[in-house]
Image (cartoon, rainbow, N blue to C red; front, side, top):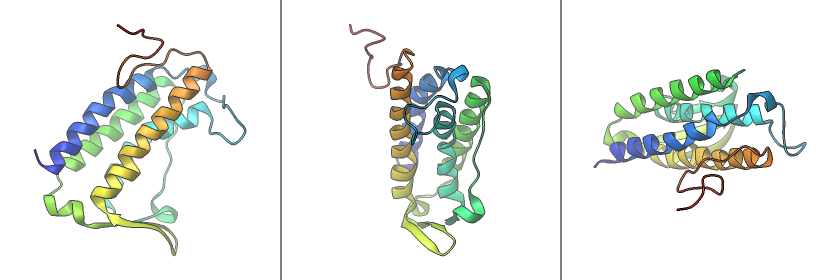
Length: 165
């Protein structure tokens, strides 16, 4: 299995867990947040749903400038949220399918105007900026659900809500 195939397989595997988490988001509590410095539940859920788009950004934009390229999604319902996620996931997989082995070592730069934040090989950006970022915020979303007394789905095994064998 090549690098591209491994990343696609991992993304598809993680997508099942992400979908389960997004399906539990109670949109009637979209404005709720656990702390004044925290994102709202709705914003966090949309952020999780839009992270696969970053894979496409890494692949298609060699020098990502927040002033030129950054856009944020919105979703006013769970259906819209799941569509944002599925559309971004489908595009990320399609873009990964087009990658050649040498493309993964091309450099990716993230900046805002003249300020450079990162300059790293695309494969490193995909693992850190995209995959780890998604898993991090999905975990954060699970805490929001727990605090709202919404049953938390298992991702790497059962949760206290699903029971253990």
